[in-house]
Length: 474
Picture: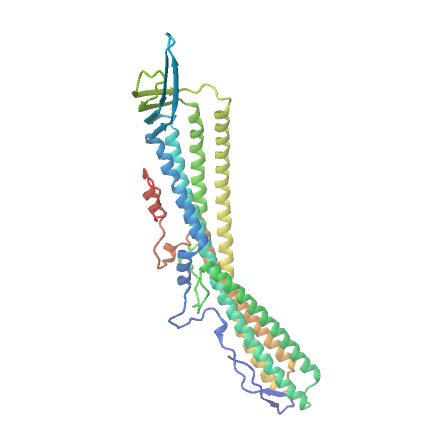
């Protein structure tokens, strides 16, 4: 990379010249591609995150657990079977009217089977099923929302590693240049060409450069660890990423409308309203009668203490109707409570719509701002590089001092730092806007990975009548 050569000599006008000076290349920028078979692109990192991120996998497990609410609610439509068995020892001593004594040691046992079927329970089962299904739909939107957040975290971690690596390289090159300036200044001091002040200025700037390099290396180490935490593996050779403006609506109004229609947070809050609304009817079902039928068969052996019967077989079918009259006000209170919760959920939905709109507008403005900032940073780098070359030529002719060269070098380093930050912010802002709209997912990004479809597990367990193993075999 470009730097200041260590050789220096006295110029014709009594100044000094830097030999081997050349402009620093643009490799500090984040838009440079890497040609390597082992290089990793941002889509590759997002695929690995989508497949292995612990937070995302935990949310998927939570959703699979939510799916089980539906078969649990549907179970009330099905008959309930209970088998019973009892056995023991029983000592019997009977005194008859004629004072005759009968005694025996019995070994009674009873076996029975009872079947209960609910015929009507105030629509409680139907409403329970509806609540469970709305909870599943709300949970899916929550999963989509977490997926968006995790993918955005992965984009941020990826770009931070790239930016911090570029910053450390920029600071390393700056230190190299400052070392050469310091060496040149010392030689000129020995030749009586400059004062000790020039040497002290060069040493001061070198110390600052070393501190900046250390800070950049610390930030790079931290960003690598965060990358490993979010994406799953340490970063390798990363390829430059581009903004995703092609996936973003062309207008701010279109982005706001799209977010209001498809953002998972808004859709999830809408399903929560449905859950709360049906829960009102669920609470009211406690005020309605319930009707059930029960059939049972049993056999009892040696269970008659009069010792006149050795075995008894029974079979029965019983219908039962329960009509609630007064429960102390519990059902009425639960109904009022459900209505208040429904009101709250509607307010939360409206709040979520407002928050989503604010997030979209903020992300839109930020994304547009990064475009301006990046163009300004690129112009600043070009101008600072031209200025540095001019100051060096003037210094070689004796028209500039050491501090002028040091200041120009610092200006270029600062400009490169801002350019790197602007390039990073440009990419992250575009993905943030895509997330605010609600489209940061594997389909919109066209990632090369099988999609996790939560409805597959739902249909696997929805109508399951038995079985302790999960569909995954656990």
